Length: 311
Image (cartoon, rainbow, N blue to C red; front, side, top):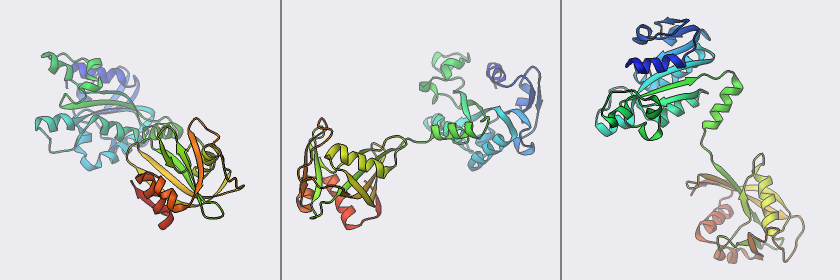
């Protein structure tokens, strides 16, 4: 490990307390006021360390148990303690045909591994990437941490802070999870069996009332709101007829059965800037008006209510 990289790690670690540094790190690191111990996290007690240093690719050596190792590190670290680690860079190794025998990680995989367990990443870089481009051996932390260079070196260095409490852990965990758009719609039936459809003036097509579920809003409430806004019809939602997962944009759509609380033969949209026409039409005609994707969604809801599909 280059002395300049060790200096960057040392500056990131707490100045006092016990630092677990198994392998070469305990010998090479210099940290004022800290007690470096050549001990693996699995051999330490809970909340016993201000820092853990794994600079000999111990996370890669852990293979399929890397997640378990990070869980152990989180237990060993004091609240807010610091982890510094290196791993084999999977993207670089794949591109150069130098895949190691143990596990390698991309920058995104390292990020998920740590954030899933509540760690806040403060440094993620590919040591030596900028030097490779320049043709020298000068370690440049700021350049090596640029996203465009994270795939350009054999190893990744990550420094991360353990959560300070359960709330901190949950905040980081949920912020790291994929964002999925939720939508809600209704198949609203007139007492005589006709279906409520609306003409979307932006998309230039007929569709069923529906839209995006707002923050802190449950899907059924969103379906009722959207039906009122788009079709000018107050409804009561009933059975969940279908759940549809879409790949792009990444979304899930809930389709509910609905009945009007008050029947208006010629309803008008509250949001006329979005919806230009509202109509009650027989089901067969509604299916003819709808574009293929929406038509299939409605057919599935009518013919196999209560199922979930991927579109």
